[in-house]
Image 1 (cartoon, helix red, strand yellow):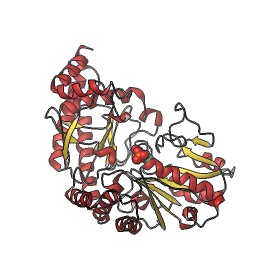
Image 2 (cartoon, helix red, strand yellow):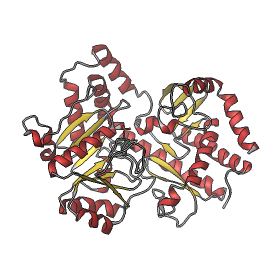
Image 3 (cartoon, rainbow, N blue to C red):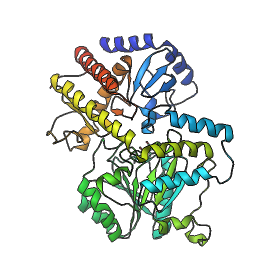
Image 4 (cartoon, protein in one colour):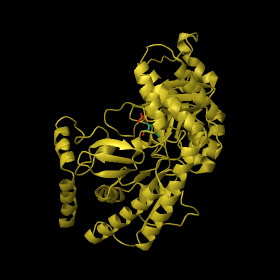
Length: 443
Ligand SMILES: Cc1ncc(COP(=O)(O)O)c(C=O)c1O
C-alpha cells in the first residue's frame, strides 16, 4: 500500500498542471472529471495540449508515445500532414453549407472502391449511430423487430447497443447470446424472429481482446440468410484499420451491411453504413412510408469532415499505413512477450494492430501471437487482471507511454521502431516496479 502511495504521489508531483485541471473537471463532469469512461483513471489521466505523429504532450511538458490514438481512429497518427492540409483548406472555404457537395460523393466513392459489398453508403456522425441505422434498416427490410447480439461485443451506448444490464436502458427486442457457438446461434436464428444479427468485426472489444473463431464468422452470413435475418458487421474499429478492404477482406466474408466509424473520418467524427442496395433502398424518399427509414443529422458528411475523410481514405487505399502499423504491432508483441517471459509473468501481448495485454493463467501456447493464451472469456475479462493493468497504466504514463487502461496499445502508421524500443524499455521497467512493490507476481 505504501508503494502504491509512492507511485501516485510521484505521478501527482510530475503532473501538477493536470491535477489542477482534474480538480476543476470533477466539479463539472460527473464521471470523476472525465468525458469518456476510458479517460477515467486513479488518480487522473494527463491533460494534453498537443500531439503530432506518434507523440503527445501534456500541460506539464511531459511527452508520451501515444497508444490511445484517438480511441483507435488515428491509424495515420496525430495531425497527418495530408489531413491537416485538407482540413485547413476546407475550413477557409466553409465548414457546413447545409447543401450537397462534391467531397461527400468522392468520400463515398472511395469507401465503395475499398469495400466491394458497399453498393450504397450513408453517412452519420459516429459509429453507434451507424449501428442504430443498421438495425432500423434490417427491421424495415425483414418486417421483424428483434436484434441478436453476442456477449462482450461492443457497439455503442444507445439502448439496443449497450452492455446488458446498463441502467436506464429499454431494449426489450434485443437478445444477447454467447459467441463461437454455432449450435446455440442456429437454435436462436431458427425461431425466425430476428431482423438483424449484429457482430463486432475483429472479435469483441476493439479488434479482438476476446477473439472470434474464424470458422464461426464464416458461417454467419449463410446461417443468418437461412432464417431470413440480415447480418450486419460492425467494422467501426476495424474498418480500414485492419486492411483497405476492412477485416471482412481478411477473413473473406460478405456481410449485408457494414457499419463504419473511427478511421474512416481521418480523425474527425464519423459514422457510415455501407451495404446492399435493396436493404438501403428504405432511405429512398420514394419508398412507401411504411417501408421508409427516416434519416436526418445536422453533421452528416459536412464539408469539413468530408475533407478529412477523403484525404484519409486516399491514404488507406494503398494499404501503406496499415502495413506499417502491423509491422510495429508485430514488433511490440514479439519484444513485449519476451519481456514477460524473461520475468516469468503469466501474461501475453496478442492480436493485430490493436495489441491487447492478457494477464492470467497460460492455458496453452497459441501457434501465433494473434491469439491470447486462453479461450476462457472470464479469464480474459477478469476484474483482478483489469485492476493490475490499470496500475500498469499509471506506471507506463509515468515513463512516457500512454495506453488505454494499460490494456491496449493502439498502433498507427506513425509509430517508429524507436518508439517501440522505448515502449518496451518502459514496459519492462514498469513490470519490474510492479513486482518490486508487490502488485504483480511471477508465475
Ligand atoms: C466496435 C465498436 N462499435 C461501435 C462503437 C461506437 O462508436 P462511436 O463511439 O463512434 O459511436 C465503438 C466505439 O468504440 C466500437 O468500438
